[in-house]
Length: 242
Image (tube, rainbow, N blue to C red; front, side, top):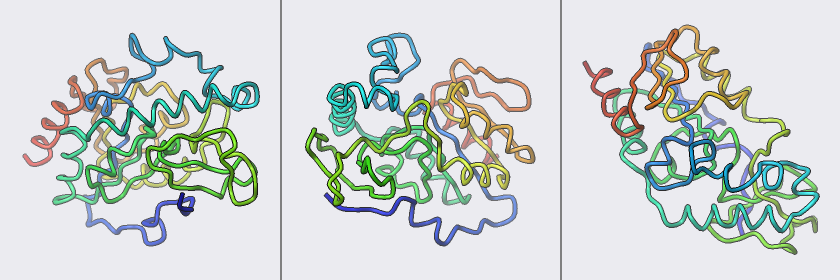
């Protein structure tokens, strides 16, 4: 178990994009669904199998930490079995033409495995654990489970390094700043129902905006590509290169 910094290293020296070449992408569960990861909101999704109040709130953790650990351990084990899909890989490919900042609502590591350079996780990361006593103590655990009795260097129980419902989103101000700077802002596979993340599309007020989703929830002020993530990202690349 290796201790890691609370923020991505690239934020120490943020990239400088050429004029018109800053592409900011907000990704949601839809981009990872094509890799085989269970979504939360779709029919048959995780919220139909689990109540968020049982597995994804601070109160749930206080009430039944074993159930919460079991839930996230299962998600982590599933993550170990899947691979990045074509949409993930195309975002890396776009780095040939743009400075691409990936802001993701997902807690998986598929963007990292696809090779994207600049990634900001809004809701935490499955492959990390953090101290319940000091939230700055974060550890890389890979796809291993967290067990009751696993403790940080200060002697406190480790918990999943994810943002639960009712908790603040520490990375949001950083994401907001990048959205405001964007020349092009793309949403891939997000329901745009979870705030504050959904608000980023409105912060990108000076950008050309695209929404890739088979069932788009927003049509005003965006160029809609009504398709699944990989198919839609192929079309996005074609549009940008034309």
